[in-house]
Length: 129
Image (tube, rainbow, N blue to C red; front, side, top):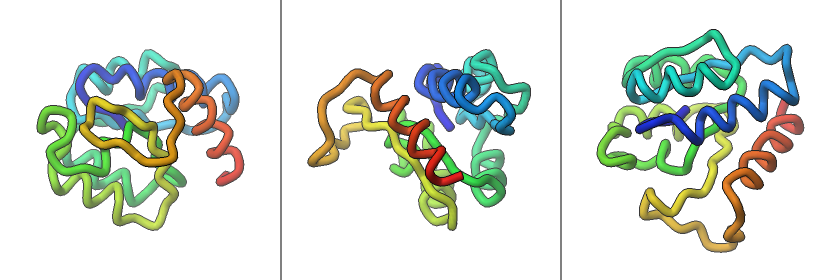
């Protein structure tokens, strides 16, 4: 899941698709541009908007995205309270990529390259699945 331009989401889709080519990935974006960009990462499945986030959050094995997806009004207001609640209230693992642009800093998280965090998320996904 991602918003704005979907760059983090696309990187996640590319990494997961490369590691697990048979996995069924769904790119869920807060806007059409984010969804389209994530789909370019290697999945034909995409959905956009608040209802898509709420609907799919309850039907997947795991949710991956930038930390803002669990914060109401993050990403310049693109994450609605309903979206944040759906992502954070489900019974599925949520793997979050730390991003300083969301005005949230997680203590204990190393300041590393985005690509390193994405690789770590893909490895953690393997443990979950």
